[in-house]
Length: 228
Image 1: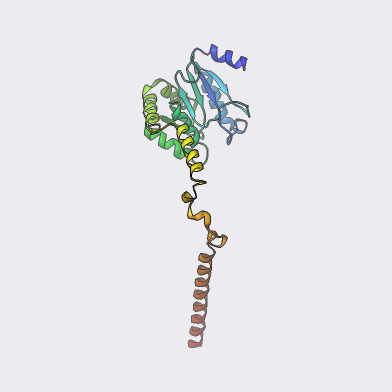
Image 2 (image 1 turned 30 degrees about the vertical axis):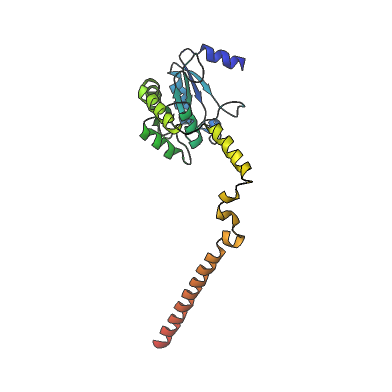
């Protein structure tokens, strides 16, 4: 950790932290994308910290995030990731504008929404070039519009009547005061297995299909007799 601290202290131009989180592994990355990343990083003035495998005590993220004067108080801090919901919220809470590289699941939808809000740039990992990636990083890092929009978005999401910790304490005490809050339980929690599996619905559907097949069979038999 001392070596890492020294590296961060000496990174006067800023740091890029690159991680693909837990679902996408750098070791499995396509060679073309890996080469694009390496060539891009080589032309940027920032120190690059790349999470290649599984590292303990490292923040897991899936959004390429860029932040000025954030994590370390003497350097500009940037991080490079891909884009799931939780990590998007994490970036918003830290006022970190993003360059999103969506890979799977809800990530394409997430980055599309963030781009619309004006807090991110999205790139396609299948077609991205060194010039496109470099341009996206510099744009988000140097254009204050992304940072300003992220600050506004953070203020909007965090404008609540109480802090999350206070809310958690209040609801915990609420449950204790009302002996488990049975009045808040959903009716679904009291369903029998028969109702839960919609067995009655399936029985009705099977019965209807059986009647239709039976009626069609009788109709065909009647028509055959008529035209014999």
